[in-house]
Image (cartoon, rainbow, N blue to C red; front, side):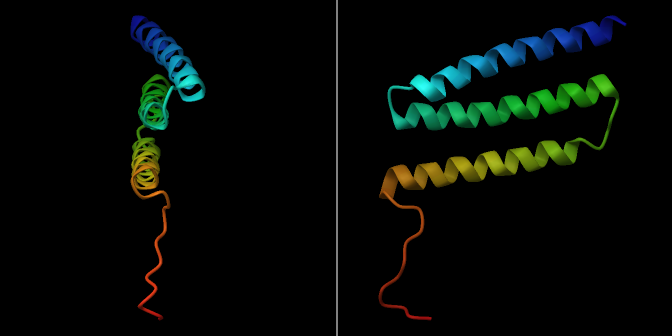
Length: 97
């Protein structure tokens, strides 16, 4: 019984931190701050899924956590490339396949 209460308290704390990160995404002073906040939101979403799987005693949710982690990493990589080069996909003008 106390184990479930601890998990619920952790869920509330993670949700509060997600709200703070959402505010940072909206009001962030620069694009880099917004990208870091979006990446943190992905990590917090992984934490929520993990806590819910512990609360509901479901073992196979690790696949969902891994999928969220992969998507968060790809999103961060795409934003980083956009911030560096100004575009995500670059075309080679010399190579016409």
